[in-house]
Amino acid sequence: MSNIIEIRIPDIGDFDGVDVIEVLVAIDQQVAKEESLFTLESDKATMEIPSPESGVITELKIAVGDVVKEGDVVALLLVSAEADTSADTGVETEIASDVEPSTEVLKEEVETVVAVETATPTPIVAEVPKPTPVAASASSKAVTPAGGMAHASPAIRRFARELGANLNQIVGSARAGRITRDDVKAFVKQALTTAPATSGGSGMPFDLPPLRAIDFSKFGEIETQSLSRIQKLSGSFLARNWISIPHVTQFDEADITEMEAFRKGNQELARARGTKLTPLPFMIKACVAALKQFPQFNASLSIDGKSLVLKKYHHIGIAVDTDDGLVVPVLRNCDQKGLLELAEELAEVSQRARDGKLLPKDFQGGCFTISSLGGIGGTAFTPIINAPEVAILGVSRAYMKPLWNGMEFRPRLMLPLSLSYDHRVIDGASAARFTRYLAEMMADIRRVML
Ligand code: CAO
Image (cartoon, rainbow, N blue to C red; front, side, top):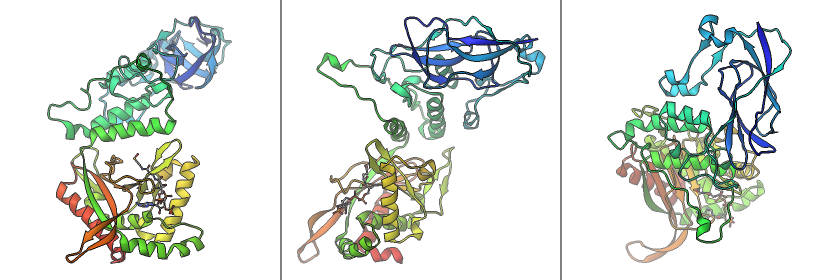
C-alpha cells in the first residue's frame, strides 16, 4: 500500500520568500525520514528542509534559484509501508560513512536504488518537520565568512565530517562563499593526492589555523563586492595549488634583441594575414623546444605521488586576463604550428576568453603554462603552478640593458623570465638548466628548428 504525499515548506520564521540554493535529492531517489531535501537561504540564515517521511521522491517542484515561502509544495513523495524497512524489501543502500574516502569512491555519488511502485494515489499533505537552521551570516550582504563558522548546510557539514575534512579550510565556490558538496570532494581529493608528499608530522593541509572574521567597518568606511564566478573558482584552485605544491621560482633573462628584430620584420606579413605577431608565439615555440629537451617539465605527478607521467604531446596553456578574472585556455599541438598560426590562435582564443565564450574542452589537456605580463609591465613575479602541471613560465616586460660582450657594453633587449616549478619533481639545477636553455632558444630563435 503506497501513498503520494505533498511536501510543503513549513513555518520558516519571518521570511516572505527565500532562495532555493541547493536541491539535495533527485527524482526516484529513496530518502529517509528527516533527511535533508533542499537548502534555503535568506539574507540572514541558511536552513534545510527535511523529509517528513521515508519514501521515494517522485516529483521535484522547485529548482535552484526559485524563491519559496511557507506552504509552497516543493516535492511529491511516494510513501510505502515497505520503504521504512529497506532490509525487508531488498532496497540496496550504500551509506557514505561506511566507505573509505578513496578517490574512486568520491568520483561517484552515493546512490540509493529502489524499485518504485507505478500506481499514483491521490496526493495528501504531509506535516513537514521544522527546517534546520544553518550558520547565520553576520551581515546581510554576500560576504564569505573568513573564520568562525564556515558557510555550509548541515548535509555538507555531515559529509565533510564523514570524510574528516575541516570546513574552515575549504573555500566555498557557491554564492556568498557557501561550501558545496563538490568543494568538499575537491578538497578531500587534493588532500589524498598530496598526502604522500605532505606526510611527516605536519598534517598539512588539515591543521592550519582558520582565519578570523573581522568587521573592517570598525576601522573605517568599507564597501563589499562579490567576487566573480571565475574568481571564486580559480581562487580555490590557486589556493590549493599554492598550499599543496612546494614552489620554487627561478629567475633569468633572455637576450631577445635579434628575436625582436625578426618579429618586427615580419609584422607586415602577420598583418596581411589579419593578425598581430607579439613575442608570445616565439616564447611558446621556445618553451616547446625546452620541454622536448627536459621531458620532466612536460609531465604530471601520478595521483599517488609515486611516479611521473611524461607527455609526448605539447599543449601550452596561456593565462588570459579578462574582466571576470584569470582563465587559462590551452593551445594544442604547439610543436606542429608555426608562429603566425600560433598568433592567430592566440588572438582567437583570448578574444573568446574575454567574451566569456570558452568551452570546457578549451581548458583541458595543458602540459605547461605561460603567464605573460609583458604587455603590462613589471620586472619579475612568482607565478603559481597550474596543477597537475609541474612548471609555469612567468614573463615580464622586455627592457634595454647595457651588456658587456668582453670588449664593450652593448645595448641589448632583455626579457625577464620567472619559472616556478614543483620541487617534488624538479630540482633547482634542472630548473636553472631549463631556464637557461629557454633563454638561449629565444636569443637565437632559429635554434628551435634544429
Ligand atoms: N615585453 C615587452 N612588450 C611586450 C611583451 C614583453 N614581454 N609582451 C607583449 N608585449 C607587447 C606586445 O608586443 C604588444 O605591443 P603592441 O601593442 O605594440 O603591439 C603589447 O605588449 C600588448 O600585447 P598583448 O597583451 O595584446 O598580447 P600578448 O600576445 O603579449 O598577450 C595575452 C596576450 C592574452 C596573454 C595577454 O593579453 C594577457 O591577457 N596577459 C595577462 C596574463 C595574466 O594576467 N597573467 C597573470 C597571471 S597570474 O595572476
